[in-house]
Image (tube, rainbow, N blue to C red; front, side):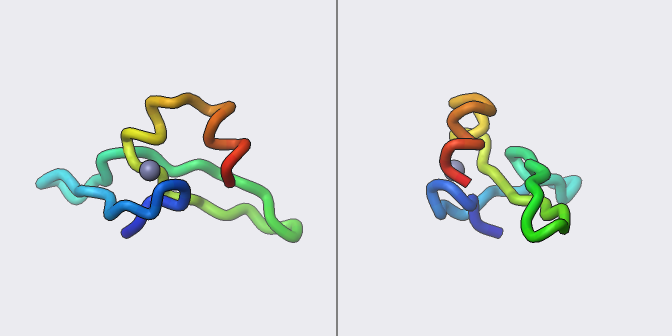
Amino acid sequence: MKCKICNNEIQKTFLNKILGTYVKVKKNEKNELIPICKDCQKKGMDYIKEKI
Ligand SMILES: [Zn+2]
């Protein structure tokens, strides 16, 4: 799975959780979950919202 912002491959933990987060965005009246890596997550929600 790739980060929607930087396009880097997102690593997974041994529990198969992503090292990062999912951000819910509304697109054409549908909610979509966008995967974000932990590096982009660290830059904050404002940065993420601006990029996606
Ligand atoms: Zn990223």
